[in-house]
Length: 297
Image 1 (tube, rainbow, N blue to C red):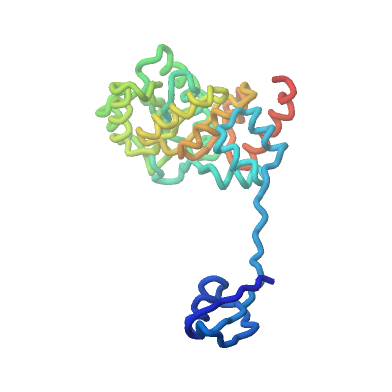
Image 2: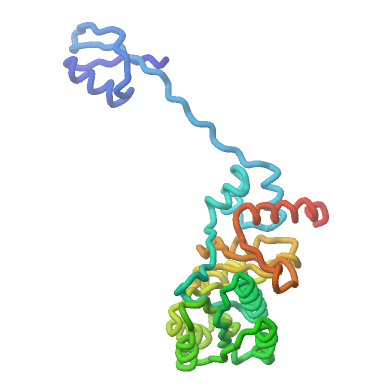
């Protein structure tokens, strides 16, 4: 119990001092008149201070292995990893219901955009929701042929539309609010001409812009790319090649730019090589890689 003596000219003045310093629950133990006015002895129970959470050393080691940015790692190590991931990063689901916004896949060259589109098209066909598949990638040699090979196997027509006008015509072929997948050309988001090209296509489609980046990138590079594509309007993140990367700090750094994690590429298969990314999945992957390779830096 905390005791304190208060002196004031009047009793009300002393009571005001007590409430200000000790709170409304303070107990008055004694009151007496003195030459200066009154003297009041009051007491209160000390407030319980919640224990400050301590970082889990196992999680700290795991996050250090992956190269997770220091500020983010400090948050993630303060509890169960799935829960701290859910509290620190954004997770979402790509929506493909009737009349859902077209989903446009952007990213640097070679990130895995075309294969991601093929995998999602396969998933939607299996679910009985055949999508309209559009490629706007008129730059990369063989890009159209690669995606066309997948769509032929799925019994889908591939529409080629690399300009805003042709993209608007392609979108007019949408039937009954079916899902729409658009494969954009790979760009470097800090080049004004390339960014303007993606911006014009995105404005035409009025779609959801999903950033595709491969796991295993340098943490700062991944963070910079995510920030660059976020400035272009990217809202969702697809991380590819998780089966080929030991360290996933780049994925977490990219998500830390405020882009919601949605899907993860985990293998070569078209039907099973892409899985939905959630906190439990990501936590398990981080711990698995650290436990498997952490001793082999």
